[in-house]
Length: 249
Ligand code: RET
Image (cartoon, rainbow, N blue to C red; front, side):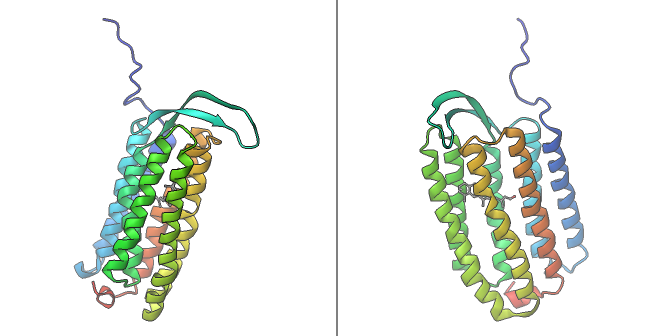
């Protein structure tokens, strides 16, 4: 029986993706280490944030090993061109969406708990966020231009999330004032700014097939580091001056 090493699993994939994996793993240890510098009643946000980077660490381990992806036939419809034709496949990293399904609700939980929002508002916002991620996954796996329908539904859900952060969230944080308001504003501005770049990246990569998968890896990698590690650092820094009891925790 001749052996063919063409199974395309567990081959060494990408040093860049492994580097992001290492960044996420290191951040997890640092966030956990910081948790133990605080009394156990003051560790909620450290644990949530460490959970986020731990999940990302696993997702990047999968992607670095060339796992968690599947080839999807590409239908080339270049902008400003009438050329339409099927041509080859693109590797779609569906494991990203499994990561986002777990971590984006936790990121929102971090921020919305900081604003002291009621449970019902937090649940509604997270529900819309989950719709957004599933739309992104389904759209990425669809070959035809119908994928843009899923992008549109996902973006509508995303705009609802942003609306909740800008209105209810900001109002609640402002009612608390002080360190709560300051932390909500700095982490919230960072979150909204970075999250808006994800549908753009999706449009250029999984959607429009404009960027090469190598560029996609760098684009999403930088976004993930800022939206998880950068956001987590800003949030935990702000929480030094916040008593969780003031947030009902
Ligand atoms: C998709 C496509 C559908 C439309 C929209 C999207 C937005 C995705 C976002 C992802 C955020 C991910 C984060 C990951 C953490 O590292 C699903 C790309 C709006 C906002 C913060």
